[in-house]
Image (cartoon, rainbow, N blue to C red; front, side, top):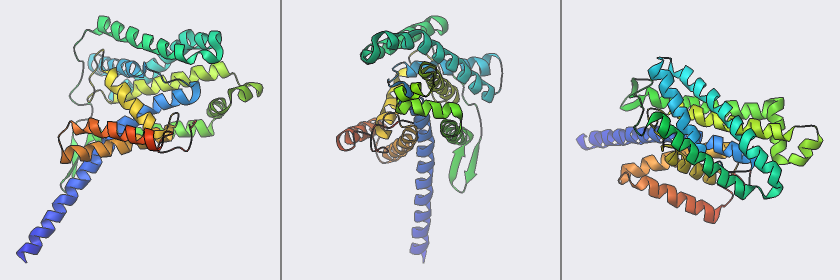
Length: 307
């Protein structure tokens, strides 16, 4: 009888541990999915991997920090402000730099476009270093507190991240499928020439899509300020994670980016539980290699996917 009771208690304990790791992995994966969604959107519409994506995230972190800490505004206001500021910044980058380059070079603009985004990345890093200095700007918690369900502990931070990730994904998907502008964006992604014949201003669509992707990066930077404090080179890690997620999910596939982020987060959480923390990067690398060898178009798309 004692042996049965102890076995039952051990099984229950293992079950709680499994659920805790699953929750931790899903919250981590929601972060990764959010990082990849903006990059996937920009690639799906504009056709270029934005290598300055991490720096847009970094600027969102700084906007959030000064909104919450310096001005004392609620975190939700900071996230909205970060999103709007980076949306405007993305429009300026596309309209002032990427758009003119694409018009001058035509179909041969992509290589120069990648070099251009690297230049934007370096400029933004150095401007942030001059303006804010090299030290980290962060906060201990935006949403303090946690909830307990049995032996399962869920912090408010994780709950907010998962809820906001779901809202962002659902909102973006609804916008692209249900609104006139969203359908114009999808038409441009599928066939820019045909969309232009139908009266769609393709250049304007490129600008708006780049702005939305940049605004999403800024909003995510604000949301994750407690996990990724603002400093000039924080974007490097974000760019790597976003790129990994986009490769796994399929280039240009927004749904695939979110699913790939969740998958990667869960795998990392369980790998940390059975090995040391350094194994999470190994798991990411192995997963990317496996996808590139076995399913080069991504796990969640049968071909290079547009939104």
